[in-house]
Image 1 (cartoon, rainbow, N blue to C red):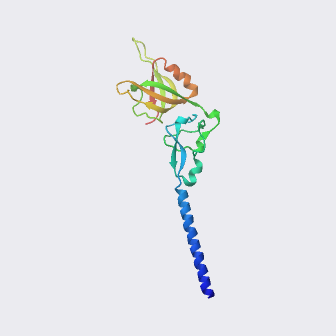
Image 2 (image 1 turned 30 degrees about the horizontal axis):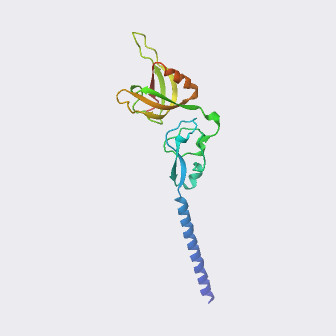
Length: 198
């Protein structure tokens, strides 16, 4: 009889352990597949730029343990300043942002350039250099191109209507120290965009 009791006790313990293992496995599976809303970039953003509501959206993803590195819907990154370049569709990491206003080195500005003065391969997220060019007129000696700014980040590019020699609309993020130079350059001559890579 004692041996039967021991066997029965062992059977109960085995069943309990097996049940506990199944429950733990099921709970871990649910946790691993649990989706949560995280902030995501809707378009490219340059370093040193203050985030606006129009820059961001939400995306449901299951990140598991790595979720601690990203900003969930319960946080509010709007108004924060980027410490590095951010790409479209990228989940927003806490380490990519700061609240230090001194990190805000760039400002966004909209300009237009002739379609022939910007490479057809330039797209949002690219970094370009901008020159001012004056065409020679009435036999005058041509001026050397003037360098306006390097490291210019293309936030948006609109090529509608540019197929027939029209204008291309650009939204750019540029070092705030050269915003005045760029605006001054738009009043005469023309702006030429040079692709920094590719």
